[in-house]
Length: 199
Image (tube, rainbow, N blue to C red; front, side, top):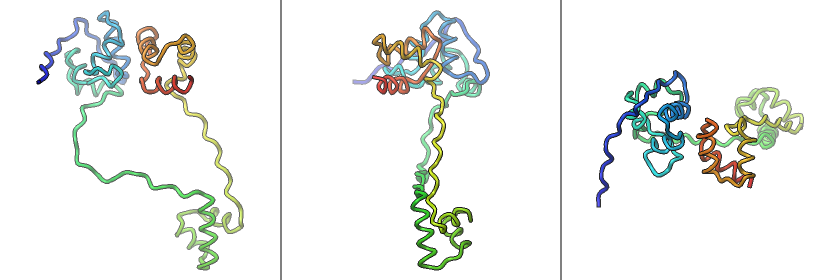
């Protein structure tokens, strides 16, 4: 049984120009409000699937706005062109970093067993003379300073989301309310993880 093809999409009656560098979520919200639609509904419609929370399709947005996908891609900050299948390239798996304590032990071992000079140890292990000197002096590496916490998309609306969680709302309700009532687009996956961690 074959599925009937989707009829061609018509342009929305009221058009809104994308602002240069505007995020696609912001443009969809402005477009929805101009046409008296709920932003969450328009976003879901633009995904072209039953998964309302996915990435809006640029071709569908282009059809509704009468603008070319190329123009939208150039104007909108995070709009992605349709993916083209390319030839598989070499694996980009990063090489495992050697633990600093283990590195110091290797330097000491090579210095003792092979009587290598400090310069030879630097070249072999790809380190500076300071690292070689610290290892040969028998010092343990200094512990790394903890990195400062990176800001997340949740931060600006965290109190709001927390109040929704306390009110018993799930990730779907929170995603819809943020978009429709608070003019905020956050990835559904980020919201779901945050709600899971909090509950």
